[in-house]
Length: 432
Picture 1: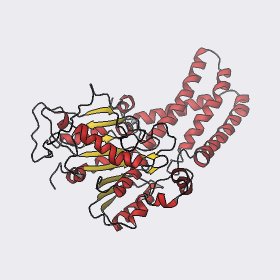
Picture 2 (picture 1 turned 45 degrees about the horizontal axis):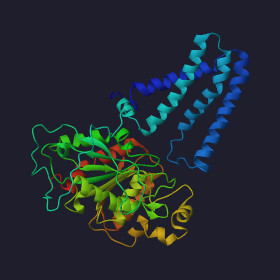
Picture 3 (picture 1 turned 90 degrees about the vertical axis):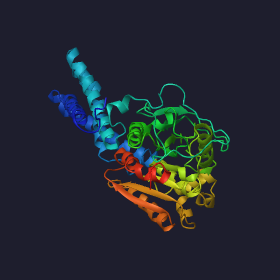
C-alpha cells in the first residue's frame, strides 16, 4: 500500500501506457490518418486553448503557479476523447473495440498521473484509498474541569505507560461557531499517542493546521501524510506531539471563502481565533497554559491565513509557519473586487485586517515564525519573501526557508515536517 504514485515505476508505466494508447487511437488506414487524425489534432489544440482561457483568464481556476506543461497532457486527453468514436467505428472485432476503450482510459490516466506527479496530492497508493477520521469510536474528549492541574506534559516530566499505542488517532469533529456564527463544515483532529494513552499526558500544546483552496482538511493527510509525520515525531519524543486541529475553511455553502477575515462573507477570523481555541480547551483540555502552547500553520491559502492570524491575533497565535502563502488575501478579480465583495467597497476596512498593512504600523517582538517557499514556485516564492521581509521589519523572530519544488506537496509536506523540532521547542514539548 506504500507503493509510490509520484516516483518510480508507476508514473513511468502510466506515461508509457498513455503514449501507447494514443498511438493506437491515431493509427489506421490512409484516409483515417490524413483526414480524421489531423482534424482531431486541431480540435485538441483548440480545446486546450479554450481550457487555458476558461481556467486562467475567465474563471481563475488556477494561477501562474500551475505547471504549463500539464496543458500538453490535457491536449493528449482531449485528442483521445475526440478520436474515441472514429477509432471505435474503424475497429473490427470486439478485441479491437476493447483495446480502443482501454487506450482512451490509459491516456486519461496518464494525464491524471502527470498532474499527481506535479502536485503530489496522492504520494502513495495508501494515501489514495485511506480516509482520515476513521479511527474507531468517537473522539476521546477530555472535558476541562475547574481547578484541574494544567501543568503541560513535556519530555522532561512525562513517562509514557508501557502499553502506550504506537500511533495516534484521527477523528472527525464539529466545531461550532458559537461567537462568530461562522458556518463550518467537518473538521479533523489528530491526537498523539500520549493523548490516547492510559493514563494520558495532560495539557498538550496545539497546532492549528490550515488547508488550501480548493481543498479540505483531509488533504493534509493525503498529500501531507500528516498522521505519519506526527506519529514519527511522537515516536522520537515519548509519544508526545501537539494536538493538531484542522478546521474546515470553506464556510459551508458560501461560494466566497472567508479568507480568514471578518467581513460580509463571514467572520472566519473570529471563528479560527476564538471559537476553535475555546472548543479545544473545553473539549480536549489542551493548550491551557497560555499562548506559548499555540501555533498555526498552513499551506497556500492556509499559509496566507496563518500569517493573517498571527498578525491579527498575536496573543492567540504567537507562533506560525507559512508554507507557500500569498502576500495578502486575494480573489480572482483582484484587490478591488475583494474590497467590494467582502467590505462593501471600504478599502480601509480591508487594510485594517491585511497583514502586510498591519506589519508596517506595529511591532511583534513576541512572535516567531517560519516562511517556507518553493525554489521553483514562480508566483509564491516572491510573495513569501515579501511576507518574510515585512515580518522581520516588524520585529518578529522569523526565518525564511527555500525548499526544492514548486507549488506542491513536495514543499508543503516538508515545510511542516522539517520544522517540527523547532515547533516542539517553541511549544514547550522539547527542551530549548
